[in-house]
Length: 243
Picture (cartoon, rainbow, N blue to C red):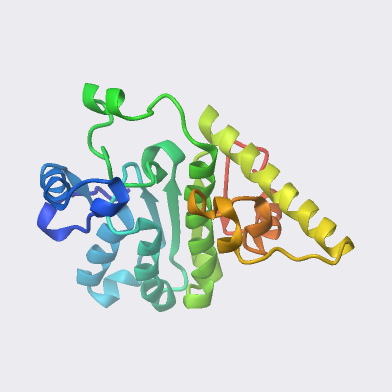
């Protein structure tokens, strides 16, 4: 397991005042008072970079446990591992993530105040929006599936999503429901010779990335089916997706 180290405010990217509805001064003030974290993947990439090549050849297994919200789109950080897997085809990397541990909240607000009275009183800590769980999960899944196209040997990398808690179970049920709805809408559209228009044409697109399942990526249902069958590099143990 890789230990993550706190990142300094000067070395981070803040979501920005527009995303949080704050003035620039307030945004920078909060960013400066927040403890930021690098992802476990980013720490391991840095470690491998300084490890001599002949020593990297002896590595066989690395487990990455992402147990806290980290900076700079952490779902992308596994890209930095590709060159080391190509270099050592016997290396196996498994990255562990969780809906509550590191995938939410979607923004950087309150990322280091989860146990404080301030965070509990100013955030909706007793409930999670279904669409946020969907967005967070899909962003990680889609990025993991894109790694092979970027050169990652398929046998070298797996993404494991923690499904041991109630929230993860409910999120997985929602994701399956969305996949079924998308397929049903596509069948209806094919039967009536209609297609979904541009997502921006939907009046609810201002509030949601995908106002209805019709707008989800075309490969979404098959991706979920592959996870359920156990034929994907993405695993969701603790749910009915586990093979």
